[in-house]
Image (tube, rainbow, N blue to C red; front, top):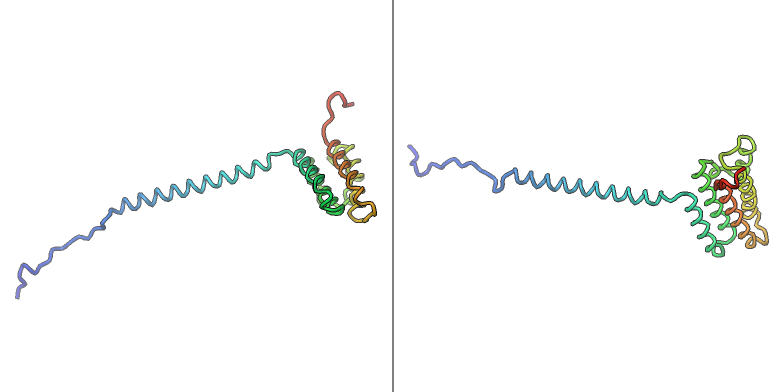
Length: 172
């Protein structure tokens, strides 16, 4: 029994509606756009972080002292002294790579008496006076603590002033 020729089906080659090349093309375009977006976002964030670090330490500490002067009464003597000491120590650590930020007053004084410091001599002397006054305010709880915050702020300004190079006319 032979099948009639009408019953024979033609072999059909199945093809997708769209060519696979167009799908690959659009996937590549999407991947390139995604990579470009990621690179743009990365460079934007990196650029923003650099702008914050561009300010020299002298300007940052001046802003910190100005802010502390305004917030002095709200902070109270102890917190004021802690923040002022921290700002000054951060400045000296960044400007001179001096480890004063990570030392107690006693450790700092012992180190500069034995090995010296990168700080200018005048700055070392005024920093010594500042650290002693700051510790007295932080840990001594004097009765007149509020009155001692202004002189402490002035002493911090003196330390910063002594860190600046002298003009040529005043150098010996």
